[in-house]
Amino acid sequence: MPLPPPLTPTIRYVAVASITGVVAALAGGGVDLGGATGGAFLSAAVLLTGLPHGAVDHLVARRLFDLRGPRGAALFYGAYVTAAALYGLVWLASPKVALGGFVLMAAYHFGQADLAYLAPQSRAARAGLYLSRGVFVAVGPLAAHPRAVAPLVEAISGFAPLEAAPVLAEAPLLGLTGLAAQHALALGVRAGAEENSNTRWMIREVFSVALLTVLFGAAPPLVGFSVYFGLWHALGHIFVLLRFFRAAGADAGGNPFPSTAAAFYRRAAAYTVLPLVGLAVFAGLTARPGRMLPPMPEALAALFVLISVLTLPHMLLVERLYHHERSPHERPP
Image (tube, helix red, strand yellow):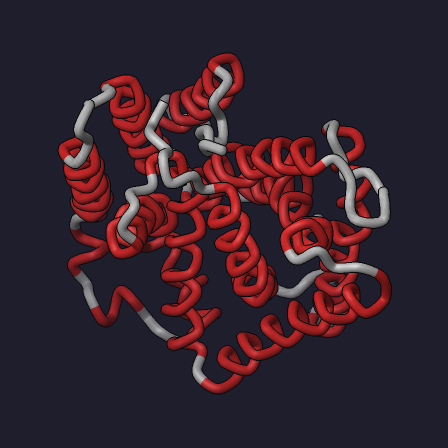
């Protein structure tokens, strides 16, 4: 079954692109989107689509691996928690290694979700295309605003990027432009590999890269990343999952998979709330006297680490999902 782009329907893509354009225009026009506004963007992205898009992984695994009953549930949760815990140990042992590994994982995962419909048959070519896109969207908002991001990176890993490479602060837009250019080149290579070139997907992707470049350059990094993560990545993945569940129908026990947005969010509710409870407990334990929350860099660092340990098992499952969906005769639409 050929994979469609995650935002294939024109009206959905236009809606996401339009919201992105409005945010970029507001930021470029001088509207202050920093401070509490940036936190609101991040909260909306995490709560509305970010956590929910990974909160049905147990249902995806049930379909992919035909898991049944308590034994199947134990296998899934055991494997999921083990993978997350192992990456948590990496953070404890070497935050710098964990940060670097997470950037690579996130880059591959973002690129795969965006471009699975363009996946070349070669595994190496797929990985290259996915990483090219993922590095652009994961690092782009950071590269464009290094002074704003440096305290967070240091709080997470102890690594001071501006001390290691002062040039990052002197020419931030040069880094963002370079990231966009390398991805444009990767898309060009992908287009050149097509026997019967179809320009429709190329036009779409070039426009997307241009729009996201403007967003990342104009908006504060928290806002730019939140718009991409919440609308382009997580929302797109939710629609992929709905398509997957509709095709599956029901599990081996006859229990229906969610086929509507309302059903999806009902099934995702428990595992959307659970990480928030854990984060709230952590915030309460680490808050300074007289404050409800830890300082912003530390709070964002905690959220970042939480997302990273959940990303590893989620990414491995999504890789299996796309492998299951991929057709040997797939062509871009």
